[in-house]
Image (cartoon, rainbow, N blue to C red):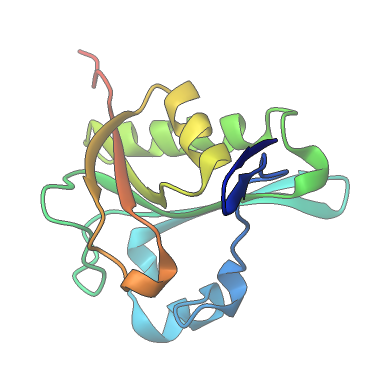
Length: 157
């Protein structure tokens, strides 16, 4: 802790947490808005329990990723907090990479926010690079910058 006159600086115990299910574009609204036959849906199971999911898409004209994002777009990836660090996210990501190559593409793109430190670390660990950071992408009251990540893969022979 550091005290500097009229303020005090303390360590934040955890990164910010966002409830993506509470947002206007929650997953349950996807079927009514998009052409899901152009999407990849993955589920990671532990026994009968869902412990992770990933949604990706290629060439769905109803979903507009940021300009410059060519290839496959990961629209959503989630891992149950109880199994984070156990390889669930890595397995989902690897399956999305394989699908990307199967569709004849060689780039995988994803968006997160600068305040979502665990996601940023995950994408970096998966070999992604930052394509752009936009502090004006979201309403100012959110206090977040959009971070676009991408991974280019070799399509093979």
